[in-house]
Length: 75
Image (cartoon, rainbow, N blue to C red; front, side):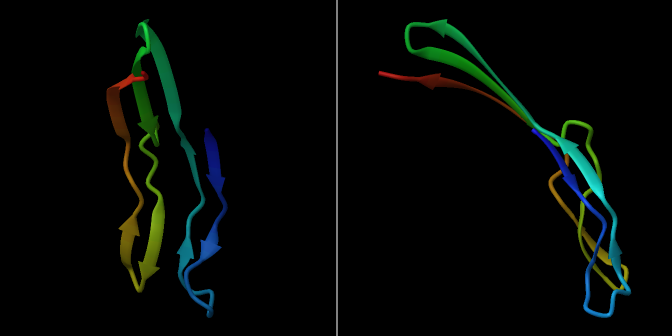
Protein backbone atom coordinates (compact mmCIF):
# COMPACT_ATOMS: atom_id res chain seq x y z
CA UNK A 1 0.00 0.00 0.00
CA UNK A 2 1.39 3.34 -1.03
CA UNK A 3 -0.07 6.15 1.08
CA UNK A 4 0.36 9.89 0.64
CA UNK A 5 -0.75 12.49 3.17
CA UNK A 6 -0.63 16.05 1.89
CA UNK A 7 0.68 19.00 3.90
CA UNK A 8 -1.96 20.21 6.34
CA UNK A 9 -2.39 22.71 9.15
CA UNK A 10 -2.47 21.72 12.80
CA UNK A 11 -4.60 24.64 13.98
CA UNK A 12 -7.38 26.97 12.82
CA UNK A 13 -4.97 29.90 12.59
CA UNK A 14 -2.88 27.97 10.04
CA UNK A 15 0.33 28.71 11.89
CA UNK A 16 1.64 25.17 12.52
CA UNK A 17 2.10 23.11 9.37
CA UNK A 18 2.28 19.33 9.34
CA UNK A 19 4.54 18.30 6.44
CA UNK A 20 3.42 15.87 3.76
CA UNK A 21 4.45 12.21 4.01
CA UNK A 22 4.66 9.22 1.69
CA UNK A 23 4.72 5.73 3.23
CA UNK A 24 4.82 2.20 1.84
CA UNK A 25 3.38 -0.89 3.52
CA UNK A 26 3.74 -4.49 2.25
CA UNK A 27 2.40 -7.96 3.00
CA UNK A 28 3.73 -11.34 1.85
CA UNK A 29 2.18 -14.75 2.49
CA UNK A 30 4.01 -18.02 1.74
CA UNK A 31 2.15 -21.34 2.03
CA UNK A 32 4.41 -23.88 3.78
CA UNK A 33 2.00 -26.78 4.31
CA UNK A 34 -1.62 -27.85 4.41
CA UNK A 35 -3.44 -24.83 5.89
CA UNK A 36 -0.22 -23.27 7.22
CA UNK A 37 1.32 -20.05 5.87
CA UNK A 38 4.26 -17.90 6.81
CA UNK A 39 3.27 -14.21 6.88
CA UNK A 40 5.59 -11.19 6.73
CA UNK A 41 4.32 -7.64 7.01
CA UNK A 42 6.02 -4.25 7.05
CA UNK A 43 4.68 -0.75 7.66
CA UNK A 44 6.39 2.52 6.76
CA UNK A 45 9.17 0.59 5.00
CA UNK A 46 11.18 3.74 4.14
CA UNK A 47 10.99 4.87 7.82
CA UNK A 48 9.44 8.22 6.83
CA UNK A 49 8.93 10.74 9.65
CA UNK A 50 5.15 11.24 9.79
CA UNK A 51 4.33 14.26 11.96
CA UNK A 52 0.89 13.76 13.52
CA UNK A 53 0.89 16.78 15.85
CA UNK A 54 2.79 20.04 16.12
CA UNK A 55 1.71 22.21 19.02
CA UNK A 56 4.09 25.17 19.25
CA UNK A 57 7.07 23.00 18.33
CA UNK A 58 6.14 19.97 20.46
CA UNK A 59 5.64 17.24 17.85
CA UNK A 60 4.30 13.70 17.82
CA UNK A 61 5.43 11.22 15.21
CA UNK A 62 3.50 8.36 13.63
CA UNK A 63 4.66 4.76 13.71
CA UNK A 64 8.25 4.26 12.48
CA UNK A 65 9.29 1.32 10.29
CA UNK A 66 7.68 -1.77 11.82
CA UNK A 67 8.20 -5.38 10.70
CA UNK A 68 6.23 -8.49 11.69
CA UNK A 69 6.62 -12.15 10.91
CA UNK A 70 4.19 -14.87 11.89
CA UNK A 71 2.42 -18.10 11.04
CA UNK A 72 -1.24 -18.57 10.21
CA UNK A 73 -3.04 -21.88 10.64
CA UNK A 74 -6.39 -22.61 9.02
CA UNK A 75 -8.39 -25.68 9.93
